[in-house]
Image (cartoon, rainbow, N blue to C red):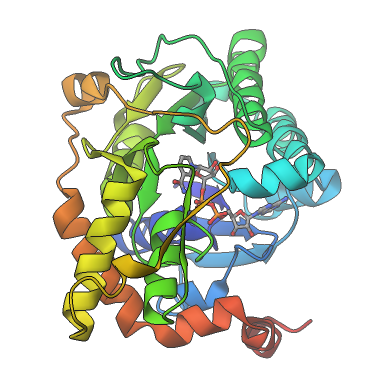
Length: 348
Ligand SMILES: NC(=O)c1ccc[n+]([C@@H]2O[C@H](COP(=O)([O-])OP(=O)(O)OC[C@H]3O[C@@H](n4cnc5c(N)ncnc54)[C@H](O)[C@@H]3O)[C@@H](O)[C@H]2O)c1
């Protein structure tokens, strides 16, 4: 019987992973551990919060005693670690919180696993990481699992550091580990500070649409449910000690993506085409802004037969529809209402 600790399960990617595991694997116990920072929202999981195999624990991954207690109380057999500070801009203004959570928090979790697990061959520690650890690409080339690390923001440096710690526990102590490094995710329940939900929200509210620099930076876009399927596969079938790159096969300049969002929202809301585009505002570039990320996902295709199934056209359309249909969620995460929801359900 597996009892899986999923950290960061109240966040964007985490809630989709928790939901899939709770529903698809009723024999597993799923423990969602989350500090509920501004990015964590339990309202997102209201559809599964009463499931028999689901537990929520509010805790900070840097809390040593709490981690040991949780491993003991829930007889944790495996970890899927997503909890992190995840927004590059915030890491530029407040790097230390990123170093504490992403580096020390990961080390603390690894240590709790190391001391709680007796026979490492029976357990897996799976770390969810980012392609940003590989640095920035020019016009050509793709990140492979063997690309040397070259992180450039406090966020990516903290994620690179946590990847190294996970590998160190594998090599030094023999812990079974897996790591995946993925490109930019998008889809339902993403906090509206990230590009896609920010632009959708601003178009709806008829605000300016900020685009960094000249909008030429290139990102690869991965629909969140495609990522969840990859995580599910890697967790169950990936090889011990291995890293897998996960990409969406959707490379695009930021400005081109913003244009697609403008056309989609204007069309769905019945507004004249061009109205949203007229509000695009080029703003001072992010310091150290990486020019291009692109993923070679051939290893996971070859070894685990995984490929993304959602292209950016379909994915953006589904995402826009979701945000337009979930205005209450959007208002709650951007206002104080979420605090009231939490206190009503879980106390202070
Ligand atoms: N979103 C992306 O495009 C993307 C891409 C590549 C990798 N990742 C990685 O995937 C993971 C999840 O990303 P996301 O976009 O869902 O992030 P998110 O910011 O939406 O969610 C992070 C969650 O972690 C929780 N958390 C933060 N600090 C914590 C702490 N100290 N203790 C316990 N919980 C804490 C937050 O409350 C939140 O629920 C992260 O590790 C991130 O680095 C994300």
